Image (tube, rainbow, N blue to C red; front, side, top):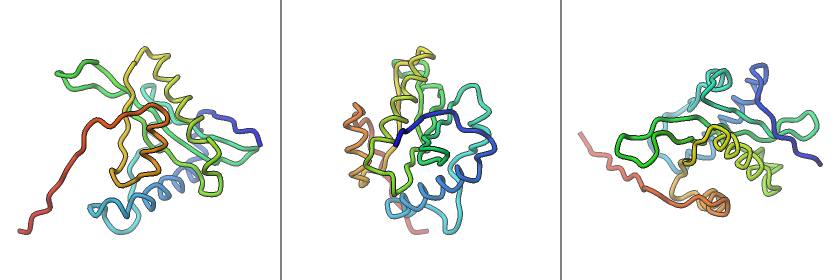
Length: 154
């Protein structure tokens, strides 16, 4: 089983949208603010076309088994670096998890950032998503800021 990492193609949008819904389904238990029904986090076609982003897929044979994207973002004026790379759309089909596929995608996206001379990479993960936190910690990520919220009755 050889895993290959390559750029996503526009004609693969249906598989990518399926992955996006897999991400939404996985995150629903952690986020009571998500609307019911089908929702979309990303404009995947825009990301694929953008010169400031990279959408990658992991393939085994002719099957797409994982995905992720990197996008160059402007940092806040008070932050150390002017730009950073934000990672998102990290997904591996359930039957292929635990085989290092997410790690290969992460490494490729981090290399993409390095080739653009961007030395900071960020991502967001729900604070209760222990398996994701462990995986990203193993890859060298450190917690930075915990966003807190309060829903008030009107």
